[in-house]
Length: 79
Image 1 (spheres, rainbow, N blue to C red):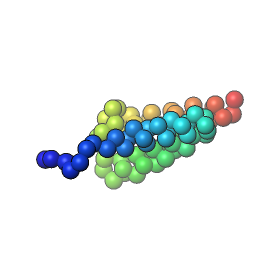
Image 2: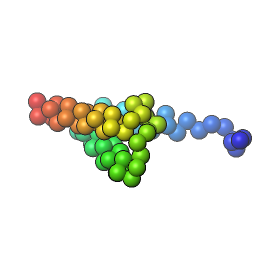
Image 3: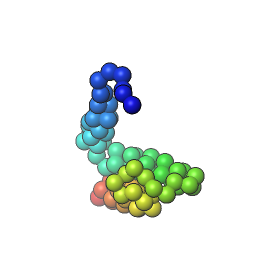
């Protein structure tokens, strides 16, 4: 399958934007992104998704990872 036009590295722009928000907002950004990701994976898991394209593959591991990030962010905000 041939794609029309050159490759658009949109993901790199998205990653840079997320990194910028993380740098500017610190643990608040980590908490927000973790909560957003957790909610998305929770909904997807309830709909039947058990394998993800994420490096961790198993959605239970992804949920645990995002939950751990959320807890660490809350601790960082409190401390």
